[in-house]
Length: 109
Image (tube, rainbow, N blue to C red):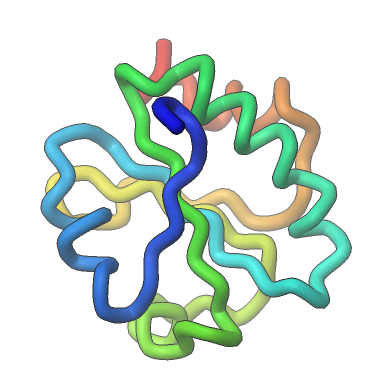
């Protein structure tokens, strides 16, 4: 489904995220995390609305501990924006969609 969130794993992270030619927002989440579930619809909407400028990727930290450890993800939800293979922004905690979009303004504006 075009425009919706993409799922990454430890093995696909480099290809899906680091080698992307546009900014990638990675949502580090887990099934047991209530706030992660709260922001999921907002991230889905952002993925659809801004598909041409930003890719939204979800990474389950329980199933893919390698990437989470590499980037020092200690609390979730944490969202990192990657551009050119580097972390250029980090957003921590559940926020309303408007607040997330404000944090992403430089990438989707």
